[in-house]
Image (cartoon, rainbow, N blue to C red; front, side, top):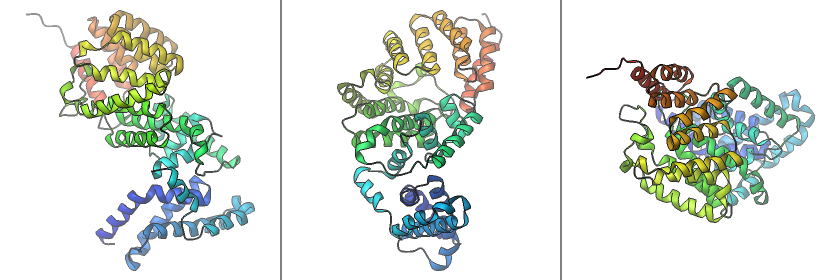
Length: 423
């Protein structure tokens, strides 16, 4: 096949994937089947288009090919034989044209991926199950990345994904575009999904780069769309504000070699002040709407304090500690406890922070989370307890999966392990 045609098909896949998938989900009411048939249809395009040429309406061709392949699959599959007549009528009635439900949904949803996220976040499933399935099937996150986001072993998350897919099949939970009146009922799961997309991009769980800019950018784009889609809800604006504040520091989080630069050492003049301004506007909007006591409103306020401090010493750590106390009340998690302990150390001194971290370590809730021993090592280093710091740095290195983080921790370990020199 000519390279030009290959590039055309790849571009069609990139540009039209979400819309084609939405159409097939509307037809088939089965996400896994829709995704598999779409892949088979693109494979068929690779075989047929070199001879026949790219059709005038490639998306309709792909949808039609996937539809025919789905009918063939249903005929062959004994599991679906009992309900084949009804399913065949549904698919055939859809015809070669795209499902009218998709076009109706386009009047509500400005974006194919956002529509699919709302479709997958079905309220009959537990929120964690909705989010995990959406991250895996729509957003391209690996099972390992999702597991780290939920602070569970990869095998545990893999089993959860299998169970939720089984539940969808056994309970016949439909994959359908939700009507406008039900959007708010699905909003919490959608917000968590977008939040975790951003988190997965902000500090990559593995690989050569600290930041996956495509995931951060996609999360912010979806955040802006959510603000427009449900303007009367305050949490989307708060989530967007939080993401913008954090993302404003992206260019300064690593140096030219890709090595980590701590917040206190970053060149704040290089922060993206347009993002900070937009984040401030979104924060004000969310607080006016009552998000001040929500998870996203509190996290946005914490991020704003960092973004607004012109120098590290101007950071209001006492206020940050108070906000983490509020966050523990509305959205408790061991990561929040860890962040609170670090903030206490910055406010009251390393000893106070280490005391909190010791309590957290004793609970065992972050046994596999590298930032716990990394934080302990950093505070011990500040107290000049180099031997203890080295022990914790080694533990952090063993747990870290991201190359820049491992290099950073190894450099700190080398520093505390080197003999003191007196002049």
